[in-house]
Structure formats: structure tokens, C-alpha cells
Image (cartoon, rainbow, N blue to C red; front, side, top):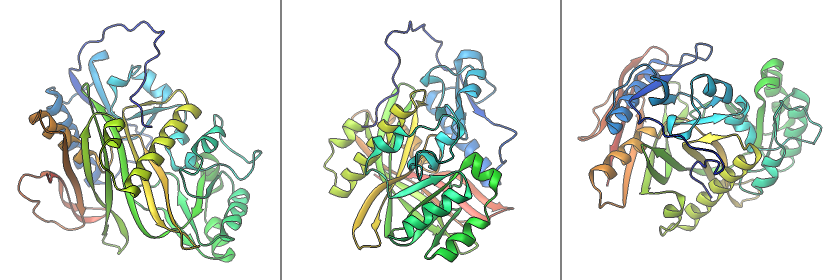
Length: 373
């Protein structure tokens, strides 16, 4: 199951000063993102800081809670002085690929090209917690993997670094597969890889997560919503979360519908597999996207799509839940949502507005979080 971040019991734990400031972590080498990303991230940092009753500002030695925009590598964490879980909201990974969709699937064969530190144990430990699929790090392996999957039905090709449901295409035959892969850059494939997996229809995507912040832990299950962007694409439109106090054991004790219970179990299997395959992981914000849908044979399938070890689209709802549970000590569970729409609208009364305006890249957009119950 999903576990709280563990500390080696043989280590001598020295007391650290309490968190006195919340600081963003940025990397000039990474993409700068859109205006709405920057604005909503700044608003999120303000909410986190208010929850902890500290300001947002520049890092202050060991008294800083770092909030990176992506999971960061171990070397970057060490350089920033992050050596314990309570000094980061997000994740620390031994290599960049570990934070991407690539680790959801195994390689085509044991000798297939892969990056240093790749762990073949991950897919073995996961069992059937993910869909049928492969990760590939060159065009030849990707083509062979895609052909193997096409024998079962349509194949979804996924950019492992893309977010919000973008960077994906479904192919139905060999010609479409070959054309799609011909457009991939060799250097990018070798560095990041690509995922090919069975395509499902009639789908719903669940979110399962555990967050540790300020000495408190919450866990949740939820569903994701789609919305239409200004290019007519179906993209991420927000998350509806059912949040409980405590870790996943408290969540699993709830009377969950069978599909939700299976989604929680799949997320727990992924989480345990990742920790065993990559023991240097340090995680305090874990969110797993789990899909339910119909495969090419007509069977309903449930499996993990990807992990998010960083603040993300559901984080506004997560912070709203922390706020509600702080203000109501006797409340056991709350329902909170994030909403993203590609228009300028007025959010409902009581909502926290994260962005409203016209983004130069994506057009008019509104993002907010709200407690529902």
C-alpha cells in the first residue's frame, strides 16, 4: 500500500528547526511554462504558506519547505540542502526518467536500450497493476513493441514528459505506427524514452494520493474531469477528491465501491514497487492516475497510467482539504475539487481563484479550487 515516507531507524536524527519559509524551486534549463501555470503556482505557494503560518520567500538554510514544480533529482536536492522528507513537498528521484511515465512499463526484452539506473524489477513487482505496454528508448524497440501490441488492438503512443493528457496519439495499424514513430527525435528517445500501451475506450480516470505536509497526512481517491481547450482537444479539466485524515489505511477502511477499491490497490502496488525498485526515492506528495476502461476484447480493465510526485492539477483541492480539516477538528472526511475551464468565468462563492485571464499561449482560462462537502 501507499506508505508514509520512511526514515532509516539506524540513523541519528538531529532536531531540525521548524519550517520558517516556503520557497519555490525553479530550474532555468526547464521549460518556463505558460502564464496560467506561473500564476496558479504562485497562488498555490501562498496557500501552502498560509496553511503553515509562514511567508513565501527565498530559502533559509534548514528551515525551508521547498516546493519544486517537478520531481527533482537527488543531486539537486542535496545541493538545496534537502535531506529529509519534511523539507520538500513533492519528490526526489535518483534520475529524471524515474519521475516519468516510462517506469510504468517494462522493456521489450532484457537487452533493450535503457538509461543508467533503470530497474527491471519495477515491472516485475507491479504485476497487473498497469495496462499492457512497453517503454522504449530507441525507434527500433518502439516499433517492435508497437507491433506486438497491435496484435491485441489499437495502441496509444505517449510522450513520457507530457502533462494534462497531451502528447498522445492512438494508432490502429502498422503504417500509422511507423509514421508516428518516424516523427520522434532519436536523441529525445534515448534520453526520455516513449511509452506504448493498449488503448482503452469508455474510460474514467481516477486519482489516488497521499500528501504529507506540516506534520499532517491526508489521503484521497477522486476522479478527473475533461474539458475542451481552444484547439478543440479534450484535456485535463480538474479533479474531484474524497479526502480523509491519515494515510491510505484510513482511506482503504472507507466503504469504497469495487472499482475504486481496485484503483486504490493498483496505486498502492505501484507505490510499493517504485520504492523497492528505486530505494532512494523521497516522496511527500504522491498522486497516481488510474484508468478504468474497455480493452479491445470488450473486457473492463483498471491500471495505473502514471505517477505525479510533484504539486499538480489536484494540489489546489488537496490544500483546500488540509484547510477544511484544520478548521474542523471533528470532521473525518471532506470533498474538494479543482476546476479548469478555457473561458473567463466567475468561480462559485467560497472558491479559491488560482487564475483567470487570457494566457498568451492557450487563450482565456479560469482555474479554481472549492470545497464541495
